[in-house]
Length: 80
Image 1 (spheres, rainbow, N blue to C red):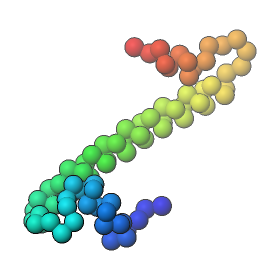
Image 2: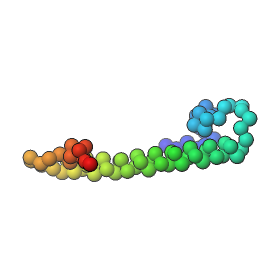
Image 3: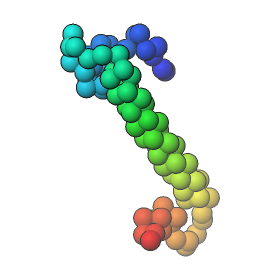
Image 4: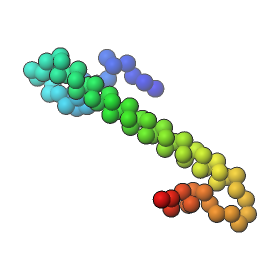
């Protein structure tokens, strides 16, 4: 569930942009900070998507194995 930007609490925006409430920060500075934070969030989301994909494959492979076969989840922990 994604919130519209105007529905985010001001405290959340102030802390994520590291801008003091009621401060003298100009538009350009806030826009630059926001762009950097957005890039950080997008990078973290991309990392999480890669992790989710890898875990999904490993869990699927784990459930597909039967008998005395090495666990793909444990094997992935010892990768180089």
